Length: 115
Length: 113
Image 1 (cartoon, rainbow over the protein chains, first blue to last red):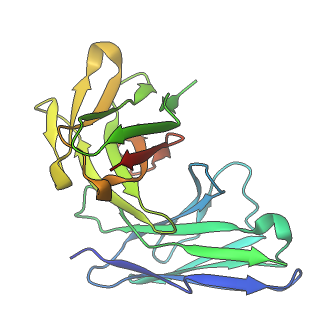
Image 2: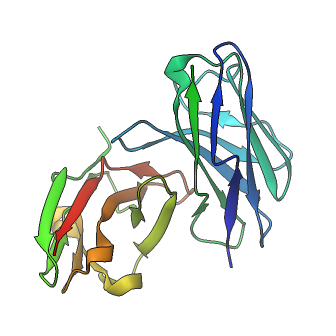
């Protein structure tokens, strides 16, 4: 149980385009989902926290207009990188947690490369 | 400032040898503590967690960790390492129990056959 998937697993896009990444909880209802960013050989940095049906809460320094997060259902959250630039290239990882769960469960990550 | 420190960036051990990965935190109260493992290009898998109670915590894959309040540490141990344990290991803390994790910088484990 507690499986989280992400799609796509990797994506290459041109600079200036937008990219959408999906995060799904497959066997539980995730009231809260988290989005992290990981640069090569670095740790995970929390970008934002989203609760189903509410606006996401962004961490300091994360541009909410650039990284649009939607958590419209209890099993799906999306992260859209708008007008992507090469510096947005990174590994994006989501996690999800249900109200009754003590821990969050992580997806396999999405590698984004912006050319 | 609140922080999580993993002082060892890289560790190399021989297969069958024991392993200890260090983690120190700097928070006012005892946070919730976690260890995760990440294989190349993959997401994170939870190895074990500490919320309260017994300070020696058993996890999956033969790992254990000991919480030491006096040292603000939560070191991860395994008595006998397997080649498949080669991966990146992250210590994480949740200061307020609200599931907002702060990760250490990670320790890359290499296992020599």
